[in-house]
Length: 110
Image 1: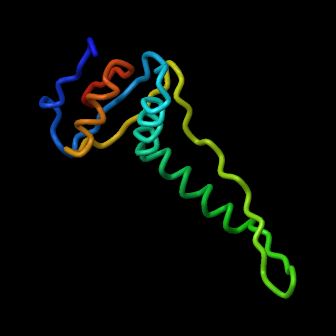
Image 2: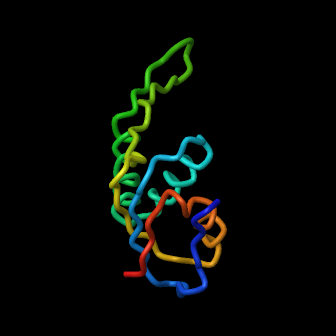
Image 3: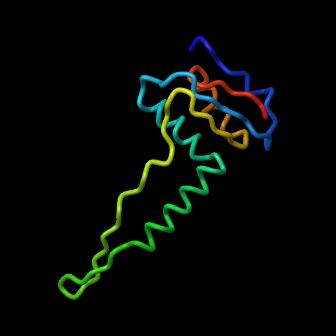
């Protein structure tokens, strides 16, 4: 890890503006960035709405006198691509995750 982030300059509760500078080769790092992207308030709202709509469109049919549910697959709201920008509220629990993916993200306090 050549490029580590100094998270001591960020205050808990402040918003961080993150931009993906390169797509990581490791799947675990990609998953971590995607999880951080899902913490963006706009993405959280989209995920909540998508879950509600899936529940409303759930098909219930009868098989052998039992209810069976046909539920659609969830959509991918976030994509880890170069140039993707997201905002997330900083908490102390995120410090280690931000350090781990620091070489793939450009992070600045808002």
